[in-house]
Image 1 (cartoon, rainbow, N blue to C red):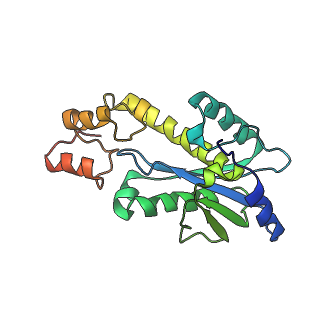
Image 2: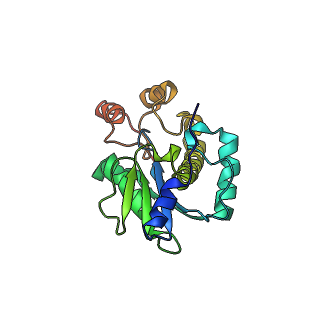
Length: 211
């Protein structure tokens, strides 16, 4: 039986005296192209949307529905780290930068953050707890995972219209067979992560396209 996330971690934080707990998650560490996107979500305990779960366990249609519901019922901030920042900082630091930006973008600052993963971003200026597989455990983190994934998927869909052939509307920039074949045949775009080995190898061969 698959467990579903609950509100236990948030209640535990409230029992410690915290009143505004943000769930934070990111998406986009693995792709060869596009930004890394993070979301911070503060749920209203009296209005928690039904059906929240790790975004990977939900259908695309269900994620789209929940995106609108979460936006309406919770406080949400979404932020990114660019391809240039990924290449300059490394993907882990860039993903943490996106998380830091998402938390900072909340309308009312939270006093506690639940961070998906095993590391707390180093420049986060509030108490935080790292939660391994948090998107499957915490309702706040699962809400953040949905918001981040839908937002990034939409960005990649838009980019796919500008750069046809790479399949970004379906692979979201991940290294699928079609994406890697397109890199070989079409070259590297300005939206590819040059520090990632498959892209770096193509560049070394001298294949790139303009913006």
